[in-house]
Image (cartoon, rainbow, N blue to C red; front, side):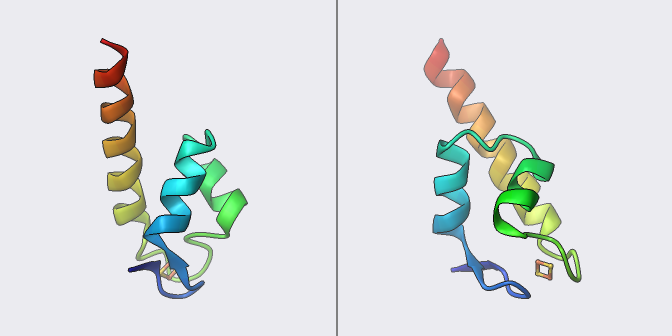
Length: 61
Ligand code: FES
């Protein structure tokens, strides 16, 4: 599924970047050129980042 339609970036690419340690919007933006045009994907990107960080927190318990 495309998350960033402007740049044709899929959720699988974002998940891969999260697993590689890109743990901020800026890092993801630099790595994948996300949110570099209309910016509509930013909120979904933030949700994916938050979910990833929460999952990481839970697995550390
Ligand atoms: S949908 Fe990502 S910049 Fe437009």
